[in-house]
Length: 103
Image (tube, rainbow, N blue to C red; front, top):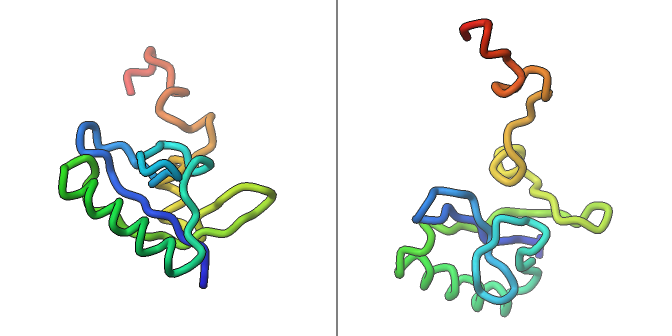
């Protein structure tokens, strides 16, 4: 079985979150619960579905991850963007444009 984690968006602010070991939701991929077998999947799914039912998170779903250099990383590019933000060079980020340019 491939390694997986649950992700969703927190209802109160829309932030991307991941299901943690303690059943809460965290913004840090490093603190998420990694699922590697069917028994853990059933338990995590029940926790995720209950959080959605109580409007803690919206639309929880599983993503595939890998362990790389002692860290958990999403396999799909889309999920990397959700976890870490857009892949943009800091010099071209919105914050780097001087206010005086009028842009």
